[in-house]
Length: 124
Image (cartoon, rainbow, N blue to C red; front, side):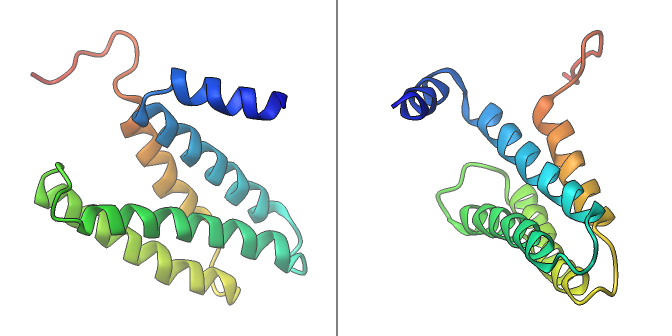
């Protein structure tokens, strides 16, 4: 019951940008954790990579929708990042690279979602 109440309250108080930031934070923390576990802990590593890949797949699908209000250039960039995330996730799953590029991408997106920090002027 309390979990349902929390989810309901969270939905009412967060705007879409805040929800996206929170989701990216959760996924990024999972990637950061997966990067620290032993390579033999395949389940933890695959779960984090799959969650991240699914997040980016949803974003790409949304950007491919002609009704999406973002600029075509931004939508194309997000789709391109999604394709990179998918390819790089496979490389990480094979053990041929690490999680850092995926973590860095998510952190950059989170910075963009957070907007300018205190004292920073927004571009007019």
